[in-house]
Length: 143
Ligand SMILES: NC(=O)C1=CN([C@@H]2O[C@H](COP(=O)(O)OP(=O)(O)OC[C@H]3O[C@@H](n4cnc5c(N)ncnc54)[C@H](O)[C@@H]3O)[C@@H](O)[C@H]2O)C=CC1
Ligand SMILES: CC/C=C\C[C@H](O)[C@H](O)/C=C/C=C/C=C\C=C\C(=O)C/C=C\CCC(=O)O
Image (cartoon, rainbow, N blue to C red; front, side):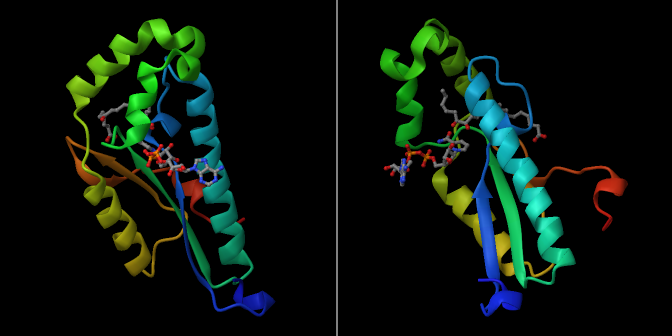
């Protein structure tokens, strides 16, 4: 895919979660993995820029989305010892709302079409729609 490796360039979108930016008390391992997705995305995006890969790498962090994944909280074999907190997760869904998957698709198309986006961390919530996490200035510079 890399232009400097015989490829044609392109765009990669890694799927993180809002749980990759905030603590998620009832999903600690999931949250850790999603924090990792963001760190990896931003790091490889910086490398792609420095190395002139012609590839842009961005990430998307939705809040709760209406997909079969949300049904996993109803199964004790998925939740393990955190199963006892399932009603608290459901309360969070009621509080924050559940997004339609079409809004995630729109956010991803925006990232594909925006030639300037690289290392972006897009957040999607019912309250604010599509918006971006802002990081410190020093983290945006090429070092
Ligand atoms: N649904 C939600 O509330 C949110 C989901 N996400 C993330 O969005 C992504 C997609 O999740 P959903 O569509 O909600 O889940 P989903 O459970 O509805 O769909 C996941 C899909 O991945 C496939 N899959 C699972 N393991 C695989 C493997 N090893 N190789 C290939 N395919 C595999 C499954 O067959 C399924 O089609 C996930 O990374 C999830 O963490 C992020 C934020 C919110
Ligand atoms: C076991 C639960 C199953 C799946 C969870 C989902 O996969 C998903 O990844 C988890 C989402 C967690 C979301 C947590 C908080 C959501 C908060 C809001 O929607 C809004 C709050 C603040 C917005 C602030 C901002 O936009 O910066």
